[in-house]
Image (cartoon, rainbow, N blue to C red; front, side, top):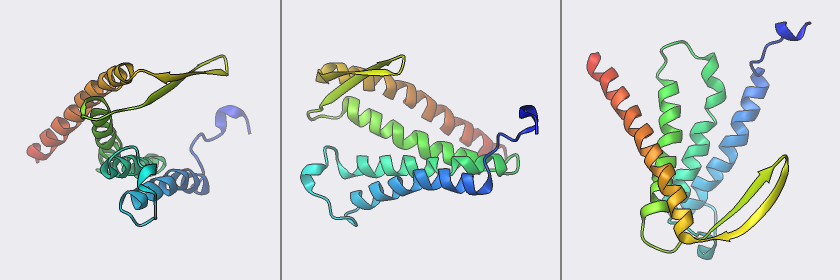
Length: 154
């Protein structure tokens, strides 16, 4: 079969495999945040709700591979997008703006070669996350407005 005729859509098993790769760590984070998996308190460098939100992002993202198989006009793409964007928005806002100390590190990759920059300043990290938080706030607000418009049109 010529390459132009091959399907780029993952197989049924591939779709479930990709979903499982996202669901499993998401469920593990949620379970740890809820205390269902014993974890040392010192292992948490964020409030449990932040770990829970990270798990929800992975869990929602696991539904992404199923979206191409849905009928047009389905509510599921909006739900998946909200399940990814809204928790990420909360995490970015907490990281940038909530009181308390933060520790950041970074790395730069050029041409497949990674170089660690080591520890970065708290101010630099908060600025980077603050920039991301503002962008995500705008996206989350636009999603909410779009959803409200769709609901009010019915």
